[in-house]
Image 1 (cartoon, rainbow, N blue to C red):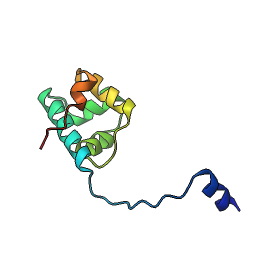
Image 2 (image 1 turned 30 degrees about the horizontal axis):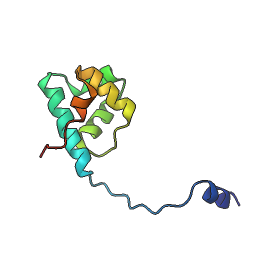
Image 3 (image 1 turned 90 degrees about the horizontal axis):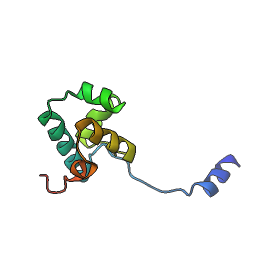
Image 4 (image 1 turned 180 degrees about the vertical axis):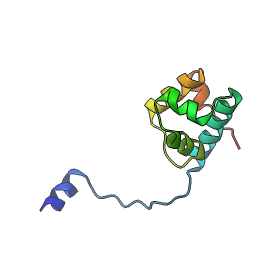
Length: 93
């Protein structure tokens, strides 16, 4: 009965989960790492500035997790760049 209730509230969606990084997230991660290293900020310091964990920064830079808007705002503030600068990664290889 409980399972039926949840199926009505949250429709079942089949989604294949893989450990493969998303190409767009990988490009963003490379851009993020490039901005961070250009400013000579360690991943540990970046995590402290953003109120995130070192592991979260590592995952963002690897492109293995999606970055939420609040984290993007925090990353941009820590890098002292405008959010559009952080988001300008589409032409990265």
